[in-house]
Length: 206
Image (cartoon, rainbow, N blue to C red; front, top):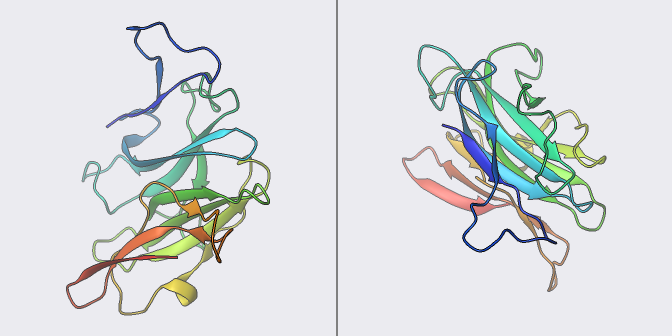
């Protein structure tokens, strides 16, 4: 599947009846990917657009949820008119492999970005599991403090928001929010869903 992102302008609207311009950011069968899935889009405090997706590497099982999956991204600083890297080049790899070996086949996915409006930092939650079916999934966190140009080393959140008997775990999908009002204003909330090891699928927010 291809992931499209519309390019719009806050200043000049397209003529009535005109087709809205669009860009294919992540296209199937390109740059070694069988497909791209689970897109997420966020606008930073500086106005930059960050588009994320799972790059599902071509293999025997096309576009499967489990396998060699990298987390990739493209950036736009002009409201979606142009993107970096250009779509003629591979998207930037934000996270891949295992903690010990970035080159190892592993499943990195479920991007859920959210912007801290106080500091401008972008927080990116995702999940990890080995590339074998039935592997336990673990939530991870990365942070960018330079508008998505570079990212911190991903750290596991298993000790904080996961339990050993939980199986499937998915952050998002999509993105998170930051509370603006009330006693907890400023708190960042990202929805997740997980299986509790007893056959139940449950949701919670962190």
